[in-house]
Length: 357
Image 1: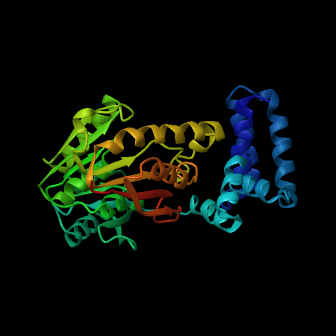
Image 2: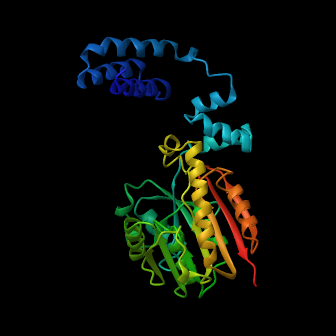
Image 3: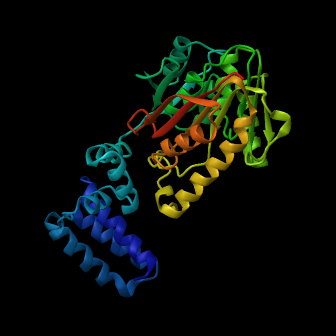
């Protein structure tokens, strides 16, 4: 079957199955017309016949009885991911995770308390016709919807808020940052956590936001400029390479590392097709390599915040356990696996404290 015909059929079946306002006949006819416009007039009968047969029998199509196969088809998720989650979290939690990806979401924003107050920002955004709700988990965040695009919002251009998921906001909030601290974020782009740290420092201390490529560093710089902070700088640096000049300099080190991204599939659906068990193992190994290098930047009594935007024991709890065993000078003080919902992405955070010599 030609790929374009397969995709036309997929779109039409989706309309038949899920779009109540599109009559089955209209979905079939439009698919036939689209096939003709794409140069496949000879296949119009095939397209029409397949779709009308599906429309007549769609309620008779049975899902597989096997739980993993059923969940894979119902939620359009590769079976290896389903198997992993069922093994690690059980069937009910796996269903909760999968349903979380399909919930309608507003955009989570973090208020820049150095530029405005929550009350002022709510008034300004509602005055622009934007729907605003207070975030149920975080006093520093709001949920917004009903806008065209961010750059059209004056408060965004003026740096009064940063788009940042609630789970990501928790990293700096839980890090115990104090005024005057030196903060090092080793994989910082686009800069949300680093900018949050700079805000908490309240004009004191310094945040160094690093990332691998110049493109990512430039993105951080753009956000620094928009938010108007002066106690933060962006630097190009490979996190896998040990930087002797940074040894034992950081009061707080943020290591939000490259991961499989299985916690953000609501936003980045394609990731589930790019990952497989082998690539996940490779990513977990990269995380260990980076942790091994950057942990040496933490001062005695300093804090290391390890986080990922994934739902994987291999990358999360197992890596945290490996790190604690290999580096006994660090104590695991706190860890949390956050599952996706309508107000947060899937995310993992582990807080380590380096003991004093």
